[in-house]
Length: 223
Length: 223
Image (cartoon, rainbow over all chains, first blue to last red; front, side, top):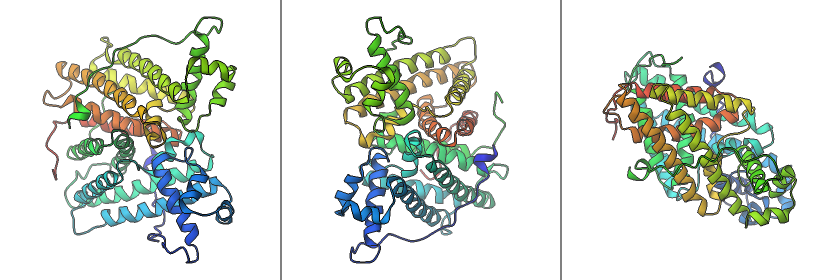
């Protein structure tokens, strides 16, 4: 399964949060991106109208088109922004040498649970939302969203390799394949957590995933 | 985690496919539902316009409102129809006594892979799509979609209990919890299969799931 599991991380752009002072250069663009990310993590691309974003930020349509050629270009910028923000978050957890490697993944999961609860389970994953909507999106999003998942997968695979080095994970485990399985299932768990308005789906999936790390990888039946 | 794992199946309505002859009573309604299910499995609720459905079926708007009070009522009918159709499909696989229980689940997965490939990975899961969109949907959908997942979970849990009885699965395994983990991850896999236009995510997740069945369930680390 080479397409999904041979992955290269995207360059990490640790830009931090955009400035809040609207008098700064670029602040309007940053405010548009911030509002766009918030709305798209809640409702996805199709259900989010430009007018709603403009109203939230308090800028006229002409100003929007100064920064973005179209809603599609805006969507692509939001994915880039979200990917950079999320990659920095993954680094913060997965490269945290104060914890053993598998505890880093658990800490990421715990943090995600708190984050979803803090937003009353209204916000999910921007990349998952847009992936789900792919049938209604401009074709250019496909490669962009795939690359983001590929990046997350590489970052987790590296953490799992560290777990092998630390003796926490079977040296024969296929870390790329396990990392792929994690993100595939995690997006399903985020979707269900939104629907159930509960952390339980995140808990069930992550417990199942960790249990899967505690056994040797064996050939599957029926293959 | 009682909310997600104590589940009762919905009554099974094996209605089969709606008639294709538009001269039959109810045929217009059935054609609207068929077109709606197809479009919503591709694009979700928010991105699908009524006009697109009416155009596909070739009926005027007045005729639509003869059958459905609103787009929301139409969406609810689509979820009901899809749930009944899918429950019948699950029964066909999970109650198939010509196969051992775990092979029934594998057969369902194989069939789903063929189905997604046949539609060029454009169609996913109607319930998953609407679950993802929950932030943009009328509130009444939440309970309806939850009940569908709960039903699927109960059907799979029963199949896993049969696997225990057949000696294929550890008698100590928590079948309700495993069934919950399956559908949580499966929705993520369907989402990724659409995005990647490939069966690989379905394969990766189902292999991980089956591997998880082959080990005793142990308490999780870090809990």
